[in-house]
Amino acid sequence: MREVVKWKTPAGWIIFIIGFFLVIGGIGQFVSASIKTKGQEDSQINEQDVTIVPIDSHISKRITTKQGEQYTYVIESPELAGEETNRSINLWITEQIETFLTDVRETPSEIAGHSELHLKMEVLPNTETYYTLVFKIYTDFGGETGRHFVKAFNIDIEKDQFLTIGEMFDLAGKGEHFETAVLDELHQNQEIQEAVNVEALKQWILEPESWEWSLDLEEFTLYIDEADLFSGFAQVIEVRVPIEKLYFILHEEMESFLDMPYEQKQEMANIIQLEQMKRNPEGKYVALTFDDGPKPEVTPGILETLKKHQAKATFFMLGKQVNNHPELARKVVEEGHEIGNHSKSHPNLAKLGPSQIKAEMEYTKKKIEEATGVTPYLIRPPYGAYNDYLIQYAKDHGSPVILWSVDSLDWKIRNAWSVKYKIENGISPGGIVLMHDIHSTTADALPHLLSQLAKEGYQFVTVSQLLQWQEQTGTGPHFGIVKSR
Image (cartoon, rainbow, N blue to C red; front, side):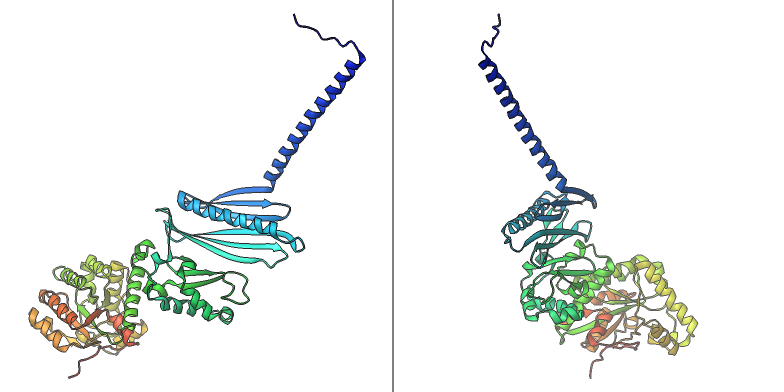
């Protein structure tokens, strides 16, 4: 049986009542504290706003805004598919926030105002798998002038790893090339040019591991926030260097990594060759040319020989042959050679009027464009015969007329060794050699000819490269350098 407690005295009731109110009061305080804590949490949640913005299948942007009594920050951070790069970048962002909050706490009260941190992320999808994330950071601690600085991450999305400047460019011994390209771009901006500390910039360029940069098919961008390099500039300086100015130091494998279109690969090869020629002005450069093709029985063998000897050549093609064998014309271009216009049907252009000449040239131009995607701009008239109408057509179209300084007579001799000796006896640096890729004896002569000329120090370039090296401009006709007797 349960015992019933009976209060026999007034004092018992008093104790009971006092205890009752103490308990109720304690619970009330606990509930009140709980409500306050929950309210503070709600307040904090209200102060920090997070938005997710999808960019593409590889990355989303997280925008976090935090409003405090002493500070405000707005942070843009990535959500990447790659775990390692995502972790590293977000760790760096966390460090920036922690540094900012530490600085807020340590800012003297007499100058402290409302502090701000803005970390803006720019996403540059350079290719399908190569991205650059550029973070532009601004901090302001109330009483101080705000500061701008920058950080760039270059990412191989597919491999989930960061890319270094050394993987993009061959900088060993070529720093002066890079320095020249950067200074050239700075000189285009009068305001920046006047503010730059040239000596400090030159020293900075020698430390590529400290650069913040991005690279795409059009330009290489340097992001510079070094205050001692540019007096009077508080914001980040962006120096954009056209990529063609850096082809010479770009690693060869970057062609495929950057998904360069064929035309750009050809442009890159040409510029690199010209730069090498400039650096060796006493080089023995010659241009090998082949007329009247392409021909399936001969042209492929000539291409194979040129490839083995790492030689480039210029093929002056007939429109009717390109029409019959477009795949061969395409192969010539794909292997890095140059194509010129040799008319449609090999007539004596000196005997034709302006409309006939135009028809011959335009037909071939169209067929070459259809087959290769490349527009030929060099012209070689059949037999080397031309008149004022051809010269006028060439001027109107900006097309140099190309003849030759060495005639192999392969069309007449039809003997491989005789062709070889004929060229060897007539060649000299700066020469243009006439051959035809329609005779098997020419293809037979070529391996021995190239081996011998290479032993003598000759290097084989396209006609366009030779003209640029010689600084030859205008319509011409251009013959090349004739051997002195």
